[in-house]
Length: 624
Picture 1 (cartoon, helix red, strand yellow):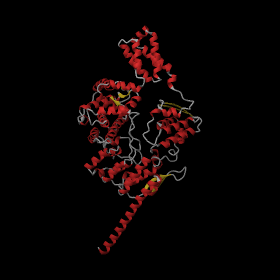
Picture 2: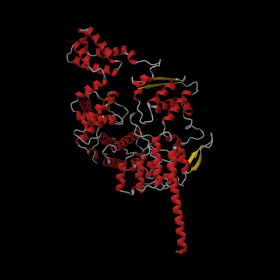
Picture 3: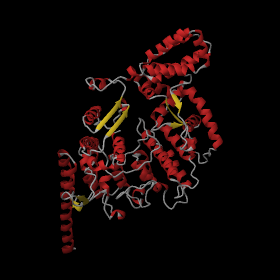
């Protein structure tokens, strides 16, 4: 959320960029490595504070944030208190106005209890809700007949709906639909009032009622689990593939996967719309068609409201739905189902020109977004106990895409938007390299066990470098797709795996000026020291990775290349740094001590080995 707000502000007022991010903005030296550095919480908060203090008289900022209660921090170090304190600071600025909305969580009630600038929406919307009730109910011919017979009862009904709504528009819409349904079966005004009285006063109780009315609960549970764990709203075609997987779990691995015609697609959309009602009642609904979307992704399915997700994730419901979902299929796992669905969607995406340069950017982005979903879900499937590595699915993804792009001179993974600087592939990317960056450790381990030569056979960029410096730019299909950050955390288990399979930290890489995975990683540690010093978990992983490299023979006397600004206003100067200097910059005192001990031990071992070799050489020369 903070990144999105900053992006929108700076897009409209680019003159504020130097104020918000002075360390990243330097007209004399714009360092591509620094520009690509991950944004951490502290930097984002500091940027907002600088904007609050900015002195450009002609720039005023007005921010609208709807749904503060949807705050969900994936980083455990990010707390709600940070957000509330930031709101206070921004609100105190004479150049910033804020309009914030939220459900009445206890945290917000307590924090803003003394604020004179708050109000409760339901206190102000009762009249509007009454108008909505009157408009929707009066548009129904059957209700009009009942109103003529009992106008006083009608007014009583309208008033009672508005009173019970407590400002919740969704509740009003749901209760109106229920009352009009009752009116259609020749109910009286008294019947409607009785129906209203019996209607659940809270949304969660209504959702529970809807769940109780679903007959095929085992299949419904699978649909709801898959939908709730998807990284973005699924399409009706995706639910069709989910059903297909119930009948044939290996359907997507068929090399002769059938092409879906436009007429078949329309038939699937119609049929799955009906079946969605069977599986989910009002809990799920088909979203309006996106006219600019791919035809097979247009009809998206999403939850009726975010409160449905809260309901399904409540402890009792989550346990019940999980138990029901595995009754007929004990090994059912949403991540596995989503992995297969995503591969089926990849195969359904029509790429008439393959992935050649004639393929449009929009279609290319759709393709790689789906590829990333396949691999993301495959990674999730490796996590449960027991893990379910998706080797066959991943191999089929690569096989299918190679067949689709046989006219390309490079592997299809090279058609992704390229990274910048010392991360370019120069046509040397591979599926195994992509799997490493997506943290598919069990898949990678299986491949290397089967063919150990794969580690040394990789051209251009070594496999070990991908594990140490993972960097993928993923196209976004929707707002809920948050698969990868530009800079991903290091998976030390992957690093250890590659080292155990023969990965060489000292392998010189000709496309990167003959630097090595070890020296490049040292450079990364130095460049990002400000960020990793603040994040203990990430710093610990980087420290562990360095230790693994040292223990596996990294040349501790080889210097890395960094760019250092000697004084303000000067260009960054290329500087060669020893590992000792880098670890002091990047790590905490206890970590520095441990790493330095490893480095010193390796140097002593090296000196001892060197002396022994010298003695042996002299002895051999003298006494041959």
